[in-house]
Image 1 (cartoon, rainbow, N blue to C red):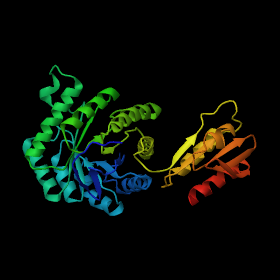
Image 2: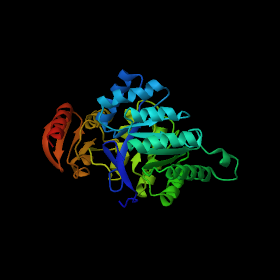
Image 3: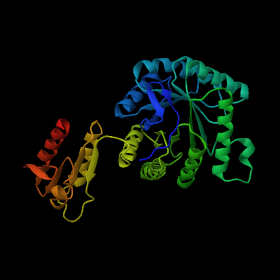
Image 4: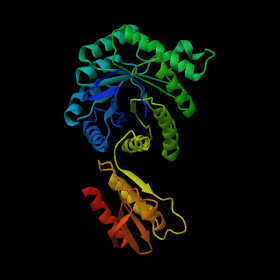
Length: 347
């Protein structure tokens, strides 16, 4: 897939932009000052495949706590600040790898300068994030579309940050509308050569949020646009990592395990969903490029799934294990599942 050519730079120990792979992001639901819970969650996210994690700062205690978080995890920390630029300054001094702010709520130009000067001093990039709730006041009552207002707000703050001397900038322009988000990213990708963080804001919960986010993020990525993504979901952020991996894998932008399972029909004589869910959960901890099939009958087994590296199929009380379409084991469904897990580990 052809990718937009953006400038490239480091965020902590990761590289964003240019020919680098698309980075997976999420955000902690705990404040940094709640150190034990925050560190526990950050480690879980890192182990699941998160490559940049964002934390919110609401107090000086949160900013000072960044140094303790940095001792425990190995991925960059992006600090989210609103209204209080001093929290960003303190966070940078305590090890923050990136600062994210919304235009319009950072305060005066002198506040912005103090923050950007500190970013330059410590070689810390910023993400300028615009959404429908952070449109500049001067554009709010203009007879313009929501996209146009967001783009104008973004342009204004990019110019301000550039004039202050910072060039390591990441941009985002998230809206709650799928189609508006897609169009907005197309527009700014033609306007700037900075790396873009892609996502859909306020997408909702459950399947509704997953579907909307997948359409928006997937469409944008398929255009070659985007250097880092977050699938914003209400709830446990670990689910954001698994969703991001699935989106990237579906576009051949991420190398990892891929589960193939049939939709079931009248031929299915076992609880296929339970078996597929068991293998899907198992694959979440596997870091290998492997296609694994869980199929409901012999018709959909070694035949339709013959290109899978390995898989299982079921008929009544029997299960078979196959590799590249060739049957290599017959036994009970439970035995076939356990044998499949062993083969995955040994692949």
